[in-house]
Length: 225
Image (cartoon, rainbow, N blue to C red):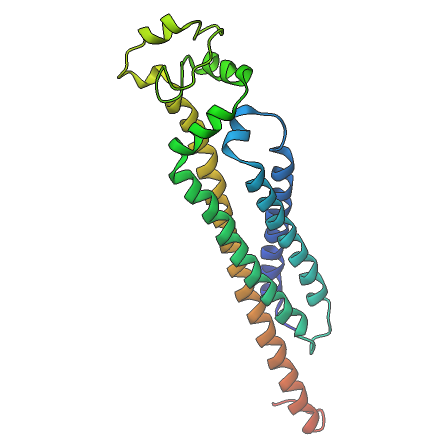
């Protein structure tokens, strides 16, 4: 059978695949809890896509267990595993790219999300960031909070001082959340590709050993020495 070193590396990378899948499923569940900013940054559609990705990675791990316990001459399990890993790689690219493309348009995208917020949620964010309105003091401000109390106060804000408007602090948070999310997902690609390479090495090693066994059997069970 393949060397212990090769199988050790394969097992380690396979464990990383399971960890990536488990973490993705866990975060897809945890991030659904009520949190104004996180719910704005990571939509339910992204969370569903993350759940699909996490389940796909975990199912691939289960298939890998079935592949590795097969007898040495049976390599079909690793072949199936590699096809599933290719599917995983496609899902990684699609999910990561969806979040990345969304992050490129977030200043405008989050204006629609800001408008869709409830009055209480807008007041909460305005008080938290000491801002009034989204792009400016007339862009759907919510009056009645501790900071943005009335229209007179909103109109008194300096038009060029974007620190008084919510677009900057909101997108600073969402940009951090989105960037870390899609870079982590893209990072899964290194695990997926590494496992494909290791699986190919295991297949070749097993086929090589089986070929030598057949040659040895033809020689009457004698070695090559």
